[in-house]
Image (tube, rainbow, N blue to C red):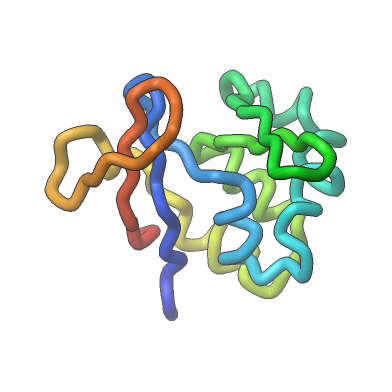
Length: 123
């Protein structure tokens, strides 16, 4: 079985995964649709696992909101996606806890709030 590989973003000490990175790993046809199809309709449920962190994006067209999900939120969204890889994501979990700041392989990226990023193979 091939575990998921996701870039992890540590924001305010919490390991998070970007919504579109998760969507790409789940092989969704249009990764940005994860926001309108899965995250926004299930916002209340997802916030039961902690705050739903977001960032406004302005890329020239209509503004968008990118979501950063914790491990429980990411697993819930994977389940809701019903893609073939969703089972893999939930079976292997998305153990983001291994991405604590300062571990080997971390690298700074240009994100707000002193964010670090690295590749992590989900266990």
